[in-house]
Image 1 (cartoon, rainbow, N blue to C red):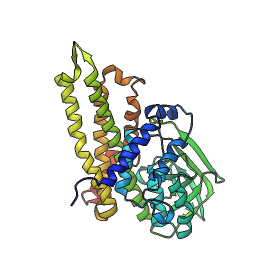
Image 2: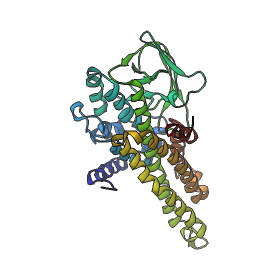
Image 3: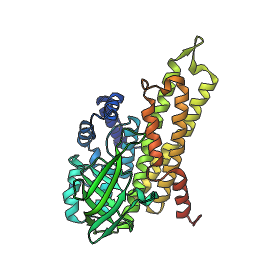
Length: 361
């Protein structure tokens, strides 16, 4: 039994890291966050050329045909570089919906476009994990009514929408009767917003079990967000250690100060076990269906808490510089905060895990 990554998986992460470094790293993220573009097409196209957009899509549809664990490894690198690119929705949750509930025609139409990066798919199912007042979508006579908020990969060509009965529907971004409203959140690297449906014509996914597909999408989305947080937190830790080594105070590197050493050691000790947790959760999605939902909840909740701790502590190690835009730590800090709440905050997700194990109603 292997308790580590394969050579191919390490190569995938290395290739993705080289590409994201070459796109400009933090400066590219700054440009995107400033509102210069809405999709970062150069980043998206590069990910498509690397096969990242088609990681879990079968080769018959133009994808690579790899596992959800491989997708989690890619998500970790995207979080490490706070890459301004759609991934969890368009490359993981949307393909899963089509593979599990779409018919042959729907798969043949959309999977190749998603794999090639020619289309971006947003996912509207946040109401399944915690609806806000007035939110929720109903399907009546082939049309959708209601509103969906905090859409994953919101800036899209196509939306996969879950209704209150957990049925899934395909909706074009330019469909008549659909109103889109941007939300301004703390994380400027990933647009999100609200979709309002006023009798919008929708194409249902009927070839599979809709509720089971929704469950699989949520589980996979949570693991991808946990992996993204893992990458972002690891980079914040690395930046804190590098800064401490180079910052001199009272004639000494602050890395020699006991308090700073303890802060860095505590971050490392908290974060390192999270890596195996995310790997196992990704493995469970593919090979342990009876554990997948519980492990996705554990990974999402635990990384939310550890990520928040690392983000705060890494900023404190930087002192006053940690709050400046010059250093840019806030991009990672805000990304971790956004990941914490999407598809359920840690308290709600832990309650769900308890219910799944029969420990709560």
